[in-house]
Length: 141
Image 1 (cartoon, rainbow, N blue to C red):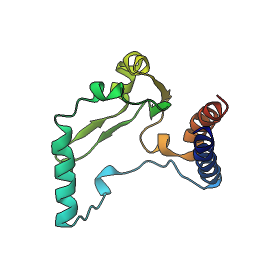
Image 2 (spheres, rainbow, N blue to C red):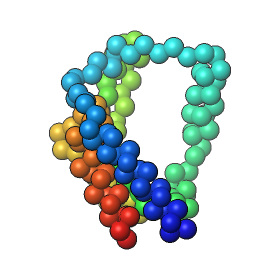
Image 3 (tube, rainbow, N blue to C red):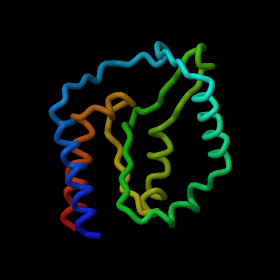
Image 4 (cartoon, rainbow, N blue to C red):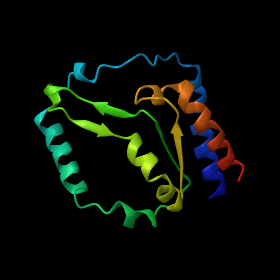
């Protein structure tokens, strides 16, 4: 078991190294410019997923998660869509910030990346300083 965990982390660290050297840009992203083309089958898959998630008890599932857990988001991670997307607002940072103590009590390590929005918090330069030491600490424990 210990060797399989080490192999998993070795692969993960190799991926992290590749990401570290990949060029990236955190330029402002226009969420309203997204073009989405889905087949009828793909659309049905998403509908099925989101319908099933309506009754999913996330807190009850936490006790069954036994692996190391890390979650993070940029502190400015709120996506505001325009009329084309019915003015939907996706708040990712706020729940993490507001419920950070509860999330950590459930066994997660929660990090908030100061000043970053959704696309900024996905960039290698922001992600790798969080993930790399976390992965290495798990490999060595």
